[in-house]
Image (cartoon, rainbow, N blue to C red):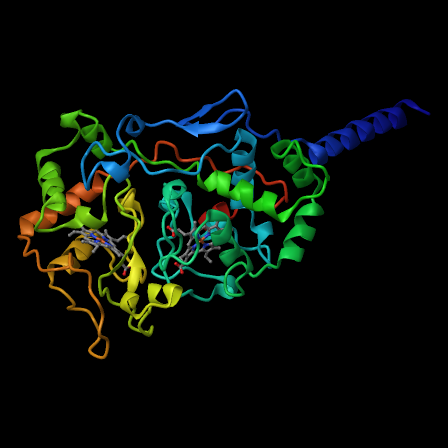
Length: 391
Ligand code: HEC
Ligand code: HEC
């Protein structure tokens, strides 16, 4: 072998070993909990917040500033949360490998998508707006009409709906199991598993773990609630007082600290012009008195998630507050008789009060625990919220 061919051989070996390294380069899942969580001795992440010093919602009345949090989903391991993060951003989870959870729940848009109606498989619009995922760990029911009772049950909606991610259980399993890197990551996240084969319930657990890590409880409003009064400006405090007043009654439904009482309420909000009346929770509970009823949404990070309501009909927070001020039932179609909630009335707020409430809603923004989008994915696809940004 002459000098040049041995150099070529040497370079070829170096090249091949580097390539091999690239292919099998191991992603190591996080060993630490996300911010806001404390790691226990048995490798579980428990949520820690100043709200834990207050009594629980059940025995503390309505709307108090220092009200405790309801029970939540925590106790996942750092590895499960981190694996869920990869899955959440990975379009390999959809039938055509183009849509990930993050396509419609974009972190930079408050985990919503900025659209009145989300865009599904084949680019067609869905019927409702994508809700935020901040603080879903505390929720008892999911979807606008409350039709799912766990995060695991909820995600099987978008994963397998023909007009959303359009996958099937068997195809999802086959796809993930064909990616060595994912097999390895599932072993890291579920070290007790018997088989080196990815199971559906592990996929659901990991995604739920990630969703349940999206905590937003450190807004300027929270500083105020914990006793730092300078955190809010006078107009915002005035807005908060209107929000909590017996005139506006916002806090009866949007109850602190989550700014939802987690109930269904019939408001009579308008639909998009081209859509028929949405029966909402009537269908879920087979109860005509719930016709047009929707789950009271959280108002955390609400400034980030326009447009608003299940229909995405209102473009700004001011439009929303004006809706409540326009009078009970003003947007209900003539042929509909709805059992409107008794707290929906005519508060007759002045223009200044409407401004102040709108200002107050902006103080509920806190994205300090925003997770980072993975740079690369085990599937080799681009994280799909990055694709969105490129397009
Ligand atoms: C094509 C867009 C789209 C995709 C993809 C998508 N979602 Fe959604 N998501 C929505 C819409 C729209 C709703 C509301 C639907 C309804 O209420 O009927 C929703 C609702 C939810 C909710 C309920 C929130 C609440 O407060 O009730 C959760 C949780 C959620 N999605 C998580 C996920 C996860 C996890 C994935 C990936 C497995 C995912 N979504 C994929 C559009 C999408
Ligand atoms: C009777 C319960 C109730 C009261 C009182 C109430 N809301 Fe709501 N709120 C809801 C429900 C239910 C929805 C979702 C309705 C829909 O999608 O059609 C909603 C939606 C909203 C939204 C849009 C959230 C999103 O993610 O799109 C905002 C903002 C809001 N309310 C603010 C207020 C303010 C401000 C007040 C007081 C003036 C108020 N609400 C009073 C139940 C209530």
